[in-house]
Image (cartoon, rainbow, N blue to C red; front, side, top):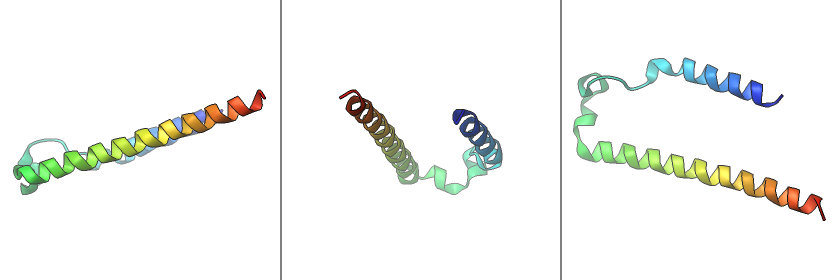
Amino acid sequence: MRRLPAVIATVYILIASAPVWAHGDPEELGHHWDIAAYRNEMWFQTLVMLAAMAVYVAGVFAVRAWKRRNTYR
């Protein structure tokens, strides 16, 4: 039952943040997207955030597995 509130919260956050999503041409986004170093920095930051999320998720799975393993002893 805890998953339903999480799904509702996720959908709400996605809908609420829709106006700030970057769509369209570089002119709409500003002149920064024309600079290769800026684009590379954005890709790097996105990959770092994805890696941090993956480490967190792996940690959650590891902790749960450890707890399950210790309950059967």
